[in-house]
View 1 (tube, helix red, strand yellow):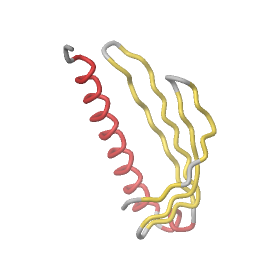
View 2 (cartoon, helix red, strand yellow):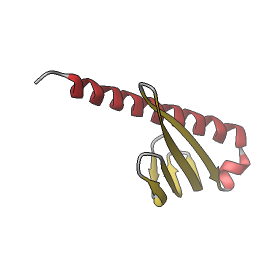
View 3 (cartoon, one colour):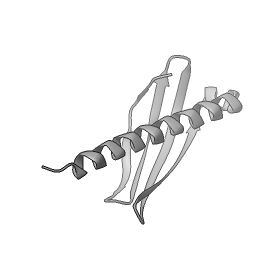
View 4 (tube, one colour):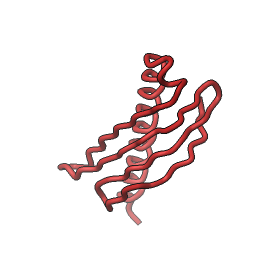
Length: 97
């Protein structure tokens, strides 16, 4: 499902970390509070991305397996989209003028 997320950024470290939290509401899913952390580490040939997220709320806690599945699918989608965007930008940067 698509979620409307109201985020508050709590930590922003250039080139290394973003941490935000907030509620999210979508069709059939309500998250009272989500906390999401992205960390970025330079490695040979690129950047390693690590992400963690936790959800709380009555609906989440009433059906933890379904919430866990939705969370995992969301993280996989975000990471896939980030990879696609980064690789496309890298190809544009390498094109000769």
